[in-house]
Length: 132
Image (cartoon, rainbow, N blue to C red; front, side, top):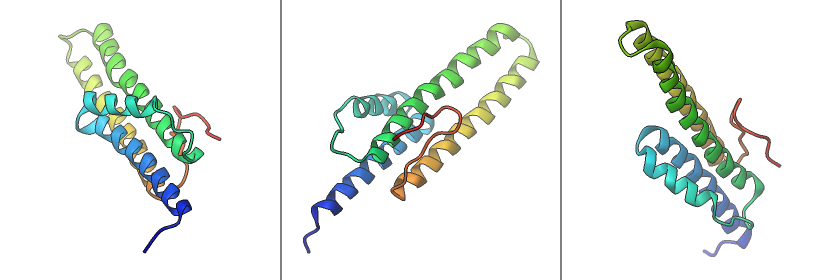
């Protein structure tokens, strides 16, 4: 049974949005460097023919991955520099920070994936920007 061009475009939009969110989660959970590079390649391709909500998912996932790197890497290094490697309190603070921050970032990604699968726009809380 043939499908209409509008249906094909909607399916392509959904695939773009879902792929972006899956790469964001892959960057946090499975293959950090590889998923980030794949997301970077996707981000800089031309997506003019796609719906605004799908491009917004891609942009939010890209921006979220950048913020995740800053929040997880740079803040962790800062905790060590300020607290010292030898102090147990530094390690407790670092583990608490990484656990809570990482879990929050993953939760944002799961919410984004659910919205992408539903064909709806999504804005990351706190770190996201409004899309058209």
